[in-house]
View 1: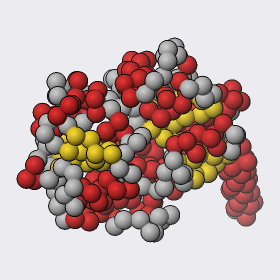
View 2: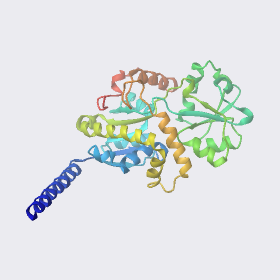
View 3: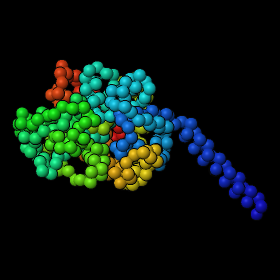
Length: 331
């Protein structure tokens, strides 16, 4: 009996040691992936933190390092300098940069349409495109919501000459709107709108620009051509983990809120952050059935180039294949 007990204990010790060795080897094999956001923390980034907290990235062999950003240009600059492995930014900015010659590619597009909306005051409500005629709208250089207003008007047969764009710096747009100096301002449904409605206690009349045909590529993962050539396996593991983290967040937004707030104590209330996270989850989708989350359609790139060309001189568009690759997405 004593001999049997010793055998069982020995077997248990060997099994425990084997498990510990496996875990240690997995940790040793984990590849560091440095990811930079294009902006400060916000609910849109919640799924990364839930995935990290739940070990999704670790299980994929990824040692994830996340960092806040200070704008898309700065994020792209750090990417091509080799300081980051990937950056998270609006796809439209990446497309514009690639057209100008920047050696990067979109490797996943989670928001085929940026969740942009126009909000207005109840006494001058704008809830359909035609309602824009005769209104004033805040505009800042480079601001997504109004940079492509002419294209939006054309899609919806609105006379844009009857819409007055009032140019100002980006920080003045919302205050000017709240003070009644302009009738309309653009906001991200996934970020600005929950904050603004919570702060003012108002529910604003809203025109969802995506529902009326404006498809501006939104949240994307971008990697450098050099990184794609050298770190393809790590990038593929990172994207696979992202897909799991996104679905996990969709199922449990409260958990994603808690995970994000653990590193963002100075952020808005839990209620607002969860609203941001839920709005983000609603905006993340594959472009077609049977395609993995993040899949990039050539048409999305071609259409985006037309949008960029409507707002600035881009010369002859580069071939669509220059802008993206689906090679790192799990089918």
